[in-house]
Length: 50
Image 1 (cartoon, helix red, strand yellow):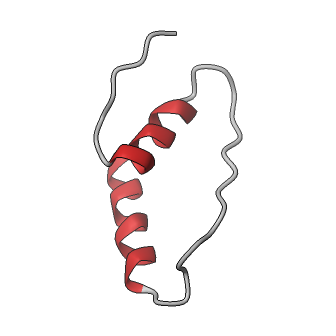
Image 2 (cartoon, rainbow, N blue to C red; image 1 turned 30 degrees about the horizontal axis):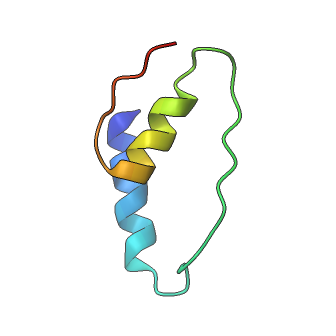
């Protein structure tokens, strides 16, 4: 999943029309939603404590 996330951010950054957009993250408990959010926000992996 991490590799797919890296590919998607590079695709969106190359498109000039996507200056600002909203992302909705839905999923089950312990599915990695916070991990994806922190990866998009800080561009690094952050260890979270549940």
